[in-house]
Length: 334
Image 1: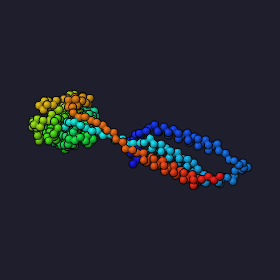
Image 2 (image 1 turned 180 degrees about the vertical axis):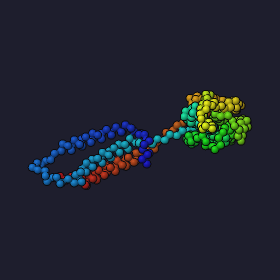
Image 3 (image 1 turned 90 degrees about the vertical axis):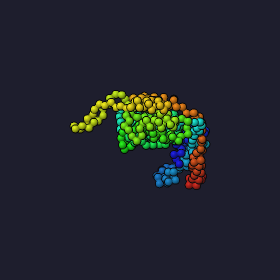
Image 4 (image 1 turned 60 degrees about the vertical axis):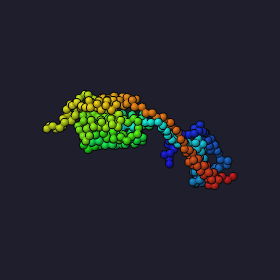
């Protein structure tokens, strides 16, 4: 219950200015008690040393209860409310499948922190601009797997992307055809007028259950537009190699089948991009974002739920308790 009060707004925030009266009331009370003096003079106070009791020690309790009660009542008068934001989406969005290569080479660090993590971060940013679209996620190495079917629940999609790791699929390798075919299959029965696959890979196709040419023809048959992204620096990188003398680092230039990616993109109505840095990859997604526009209208509605009941009840209870104590336990007789 308490966590509901950490995300609130006030309908009448100016009422909170009354809280400034509390320090003045405390000062007035303290000043009056300090200036109070005994009306009778005595020659010694020795006999008064044992007259203190719990009632004397707690004589300020009613005043503290009154101050606390006033604080809660003022907060209630300011009318705290919990805010809910809802988006109403009208129009036609795009169905998109993000197809990630998660083979071992995606852990290379020519993009920081590595190719796969950089790809995930940029994809998450891309999703923030695609309100109204249905998005799914497919991963592939030697095999392919649907990590998330197309859905408007972007929080679920983001969660699945965040959890992607290299080696999630047991067999390592790069089967572009299998990854693309699985992605197209996710869109096959879609009623959307615009269906898009964003295929990201850093490797050369090593064969698989479905050849790339067959997957490409599937995309054309079901009117799926494929944007292909070849990821990775053209510079040589050092990779560990097992030799008779142990593990040694050797320079190697990682390659990918650029011709295949260009063919898939051009024949399906998409485009091919080459990303060598994380910033470059961000630019690729920005370009795709501009090319594939959703025809949606988003209206945002704010709903409020009053939360003044609890502070009001606490304030009233504290004031009532203060009056009861003042008229009973701490009652003063003339």
